[in-house]
Amino acid sequence: MGILTNVVPSNAAAVIGTPISINIAQQLELPAEPFVLAIIFGSNLCFATPLTHKINVLVMSAGSYTFSDFARIGVSLLIIMWLAYSWVLPAIYGL
Image (cartoon, rainbow, N blue to C red; front, top):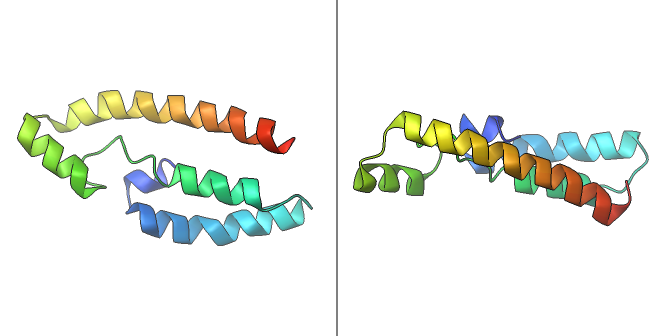
């Protein structure tokens, strides 16, 4: 989801991913809530490119940042958040 949200807007990524996550949860006979939360959190990981969110574009122009600045810092932050969510959600829901 973090990769998808850097290509399409976060709203569209959430709309695409939510039915898929609910279906996976039903097939695994697990509660859907942690899967939907993973989609919600993952669809907000739009740090790697400046083009996926209006705020990123404003910051890019005001701070004279380049695309590579977003990629360098954004990918690192995306990986950190992905690992944190992958650890926290299963720990909270006992999966």
